[in-house]
Image (cartoon, rainbow, N blue to C red; front, side, top):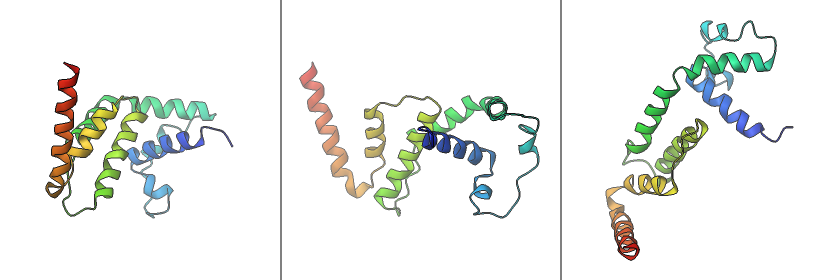
Length: 141
């Protein structure tokens, strides 16, 4: 097995999710995908040709996808009834999606979004993070 299987698998899942056919491929939905989804690769003779056709079809919307993912990342829809790990998983999934389309996020950006997304009951951690940041900012001056 190739060393990049996990990366390839993740990339294919993203493409299939975007095309609306991931649930069909995983067997979670018995609905058949629309035939237009096959039009992109129906004439491909090799895997490279199929991949190139998919890239061409889906890269057209890459900028729009990038903006949508960034908006979801920087303005997370916090669910106060969800467990912390569920909200954290949502954010880390967005991070992985952004990284898969070559968007660079700093660790500080990721931590900031995770802290901002804490429940109000956990605001003590948010304040602690702010106090720590202020202390570090004063040290660097």
